[in-house]
Amino acid sequence: MPNKKRLIEEFIELVKIDSLTGKEKNMAQLLLKKLEELGFEVTIDDAGKFAGGETGNVIATLKGNRPGKKLLFTAHMDTVEPGIGINPIIDEEKQIIKSDGTTILGSDDKAGIAAILEAMRTLKEKNISHSDIQVVFSIWEEQGLLGARYLDYSKIDADYIYVFDMDGSPGRIITRASAQDKITVKIIGKAAHAGLHPEKGVSALIVASHAIENMNLLRIDDETTANLGMITGGTGTNSVMSELTIHGEARSLDEKKLNKQTNHMVDCFKEAADKYGADIEIDVSRVYDVVNIDDNDEIVKLAEKAFANLGIETYTDSTGGGSDVNVYAGKGYKAVNLAIGMTNAHSVNEFIKIEDLYNSSRVILEIIKEG
Ligand code: ZN
Ligand code: CA
Image (cartoon, rainbow, N blue to C red):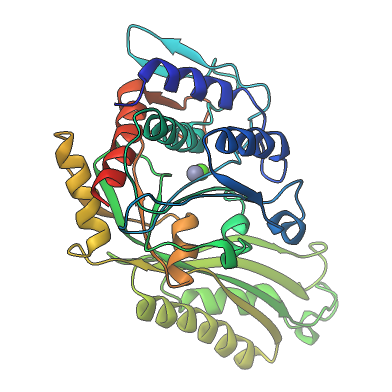
């Protein structure tokens, strides 16, 4: 069994170290040292150089002392704002750990890191036999999954990747996650004086409104969403708006549906531009790929077995949010995201139940035993 007291102490230690996105160096150095002390071979890759941050991903490898599935456990090091000078508070009565209300707590995702570290410490301490294990602590998850994207995959050798970065209590297994497209559209009409000869202009805004009128947006179906979230344009009320830029996105659990929705949005803009004789520049990018693991897949079965050993009920679930698991799935790895109990993440009301933190660490150990 992992040591609960030691786990809490280490979690507190970790959240007190500032590690905003791109500024994870102190955290990475500490985790490198901790993993080396646990007997792992540890390196830091070059992902930080590509992303433009202070440090790369921490990649740690522990050779197995028996055959079995090659397991990779991962959590991300970076946190969102306000995340400087976090002062964690243990609420003994509620058995939770929270922030003091001025910052986030950082259980997203240091609960994952602490749970993994304590499981590995227990593994060593109790001399538990295990197959090959890797641990990755990634940078830059919160702003575009760049750590996972630029991870040095030549150092990765894993059958199953378990990501610990999800809300909900342990037992919630995320097997499906949406892919996302970002869509940026610049409409270039023609300026003209709004009072003297507006008929000489082409209003980018009217082009956009025509496009949007014909566009399916927001909830498309139970697996698909689309949104135009930002718009900029215009110089004054006396000018016909000559340029306008719209930023939007589409997400779906089904890649075909996503392609269809994105194409639909692009077509609406093109059709409107055509109709009014405006120019248009459209930029579409796949931000991350779909995660779609069958409920009967071995990676799920192994997690279920591990939870069953602890008497914890499980269920598979989907999410519209992106995480490192989307990148691993896109690279062809078998990966799922396991809930660790982070609650109200990305807010100053963030907290985690001590029991959820503890169970996350326990289940890692059970996955290793069964793997
Ligand atoms: Zn996270
Ligand atoms: Ca997050």
